[in-house]
Amino acid sequence: SSKGPQSDDVADADGSQSVPVIGFVQTGAESDWRKAHSESVRDAAKASGYDLRFADGQGKQENQIKALSSFVAQGVDGIILSPLVETGWDNVLEKAKKRDIPVLILDRQVDVKDDSLYVTYIGADTYNEGRLAAEWLIEETGGTAKVVELQGTPGASPTINRFKGFRDVIADHSGIEIIATQSGDFRRSKGKEVMEAMLKKHGDDIDVVYAHNDDMAIGAIQAIEDAGKKPGDDIILVSIDGVRGAFEAMVEGKLNCTVECNPLQGPMAFEAMDKILAGDTADIPKKQMIKDEVYDRDTAKDVIDSRKY
Ligand code: GYE
Image (cartoon, rainbow, N blue to C red):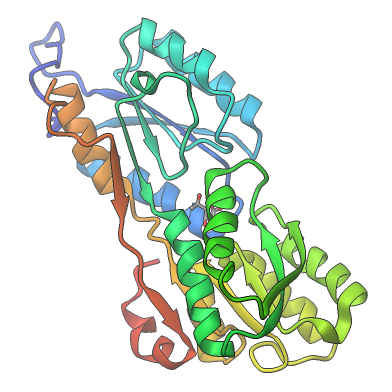
């Protein structure tokens, strides 16, 4: 029997309660963070008694839009969207609104004309993560370093926010200079490829890699080692997410710092969905941000065994 919201449930012909159907539109499977995120949503749906329909956008907004339209056409009870990029959602969200299908935005943000097109946003404070990465770096380097930046997917809210948060902090520190910046699409292979090109071009000038996620940092570590340098010592690396691979790299001394970004958002999402489907939206904030911690090489060993993703 469903532990989900009872009030809106329709009794089936045999008298049993029908299980609410939720369409989940995911970005893809670009990183370890994303895999943990998908798993968290799947597990929480099950634990809360929902029937989850999972649509994998495979890194393309058009796939996500198609999946959303199709969930609307199916008349699902609710939709959870993790949008690849920030813009371009107005039309499809209007379709959902016209059919009275509530939409919860999870992880990445949307930029829409009309905020009533979604009920609530739940995710990490990715702007603050960019700030925390910069603050750690200033502390570590004493405020002097030439930095190369590996950006996430162009147009994605964490990319925009981690780009800006970092710059807002280094603005007061003229000794920190970004000498190159390019997208590695939040992917390990792309991070390695972009880092190889940066090493060829900038060689010994590079003091620091700032990667918008751990997967790209791990790719960059490979490229640095292939170039005969010692990641963590010859070049400092700071990234974001806090996935297991990052903790392993820190324990090995190859990654200097990761700013946590918690992907285990499923329970929060379905707690909110319970309320939404029960018509209990009054106390749901428009925006719910998850808190992040900073970990570095000194603290990694002590916490690696307690990491949940
Ligand atoms: O940092 C990255 C993932 O949207 C915050 O997306 C998320 C980011 C995360 O692919 O690893």
